[in-house]
Amino acid sequence: QVQLVESGGGLVQPGGSLRLSCAASGFTFSRYAMSWYRQAPAKERELVAAITSAGGSTNYTDSVKGRFTISRDNAKNTVYLQMNSLKPEDTAVYYCKARRYQWGHEYIYWGQGTQVTVSS
Image 1 (cartoon, one colour):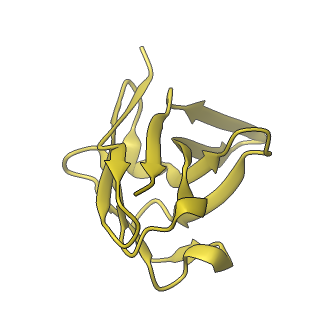
Image 2: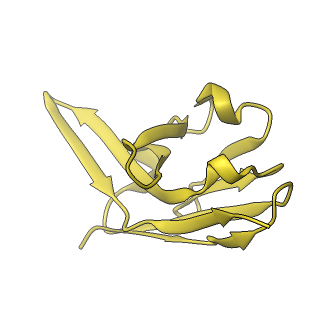
């Protein structure tokens, strides 16, 4: 059974930090590109950061560059999102996503999300 379980969300003051984790099971994690998305109330879900299957390449949406860092540990089947200098506009539900494209098929899995609230 495929599972992606996010953790690490919570309430933090502006300027603070959080580290999100996404633990994967039920599929070959090291073969999947991983990404973090977020969705704020009444807004579309947006890509925050992504990392290739081996971790050699990352990319970020402009609003988090220099503040967020995505990383992965393939031995632990886990992807992380280190979030520093948090702003109120970072408030959202954060989701991790696994994606692989092979032999004409796209395989995508989503986690259930973890709430991040940045407020004083």
